Length: 259
Image 1 (tube, rainbow, N blue to C red):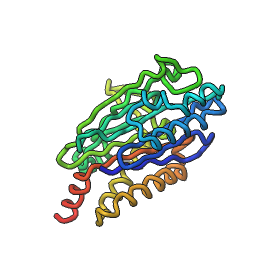
Image 2: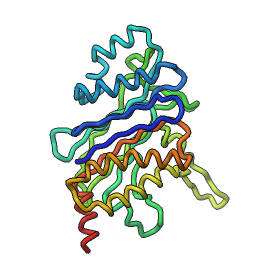
Image 3: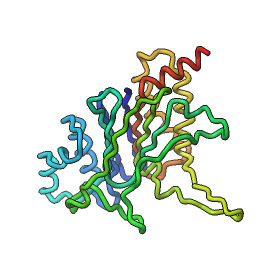
């Protein structure tokens, strides 16, 4: 299983992301507070540096407790993915908004469309009807705001599994409004940033020849795709992107290449 997470500064320098061999985390500082970048960075550094596996352990971290007691005014969203004991199992956990999508290794083999569409949103943002965050890590977060959502997934599909995790600088489900046309059909507004990521990811996987180099290639791709999103003006805010790819995805693309 391959992990990568990167962030890019666009506006307030308040997004942070990092990863190790077993987990990744992305945090999006709450823009209305000046010190949110400090909170987001500390959360990321402690989660990865101390190899935490769940939010409750992180919240009890001494450095985070000291930050809150020092009257730092700021906060952040939280999205993490941690490999479980099972080879194929991961746990996803989140507070706030952003997105997590799950797709299989054959996502680009579409019969009905030229655009990648066979994936599922698996994160329902913690957002009120008026757009306010209802859950977060911050100077005024209490038990309710720190009550996370968790999802456990077995990544064992025959063509492999891919998980994309991102802050709302890239996309969030509350922005994908549903529209009804004159023929009583319903359409969801799709985010072009997600389509660009999927198309570029397909090209990366097609060009992957040496599996031994894929981890480094994935890290490089992660940074480049964020820069692409910025240059294409798809980002109006700081953005973070995390990627998880299982070995079966590489096997599937290798078989396609050799057919």
